[in-house]
Image (cartoon, rainbow, N blue to C red; front, side, top):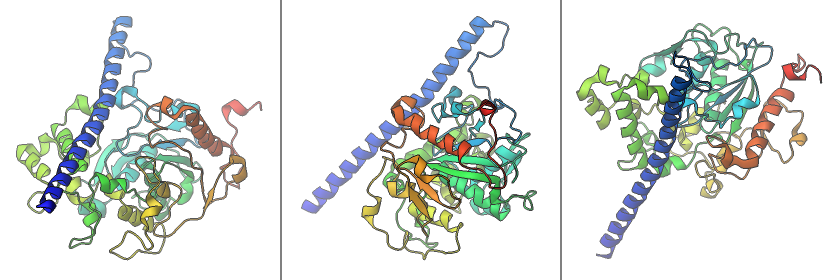
Length: 439
């Protein structure tokens, strides 16, 4: 009797926790979305009042607008800021800045809009074509295994079409964006982009900066609903969700969002699953039922059925698999990694574990240096992760600048300063910036 009462109590507490978590997360999402819509509508009303004949009010984002404030001719490497999970790039959410305006600290910064829930692989491919131009190619083998179209959107002109070894970029990734930029550099090294395979190399990237990056996964993925075990016929149970969890609510919401396929909604925000063909215009009502139930009879329809979305990549197993591409060692199945200890993963910023953010550790540890004073790490040496621990929560340096306080400016000023002053090829002197010609 006592065991039944205890089980019932635990079930009730679990349900209450799920309900509270869902209310908090959905409330925050609607707040951000509503703020963007209100700001955009207000700007449109002001625009009509001030310019009855048409036009666009200053500061209103226009879809398809060229992000570059200046011509990116390669004379100065651009800094590319890559958002994390549920993030967005320039032009979405009524012009709201994911990086809270940090992109204004330099006049050669790009903020791409990638799929907010798409996998690290798919986002890395999207980032390449965003910069170089052309139609996004997710790769034939990957697309077939994941059950989606091979090709995605087309960038008639890339945002940095001169991109090559002689005209590299600085990549800065927040949260899941850190894994995206690392994987992109690996793909460039491996020559994985058809039509560019003989040209690309890791030297297309001048520096990689991780800001609260999920370099080794996060235990938050399990708290929110990912299974922690590998107990299935493929040994990949960690790719699937528990039946009742917060991520199931996320799954249903994103499926409905893509199925509705409303242009005015898509203008503001995009989960990034267009290449899965989930629109009502494509699958109809019966297709929606299949998507919500998680399969098409064979159990593999949509990103959540195939596991080709971002959260599986944020598990410890998923991060180890991505990191294994960047070394020759492979971890044995059945464990996140040898030597795992719970206490190593206790410190966190509310979303990611501190252990995961400093530098890649699994399946093999990369060389790293903890930085107390920026001047102590100069000159920066290739192949080493320099990291600094700042006391802040996971969202302190994105969305809302005031939350970051003084640390916001210190962090981004340090990142941009290192990109411009301390990272350059030894065969060439650092470039002269427009505002430094007289200094």
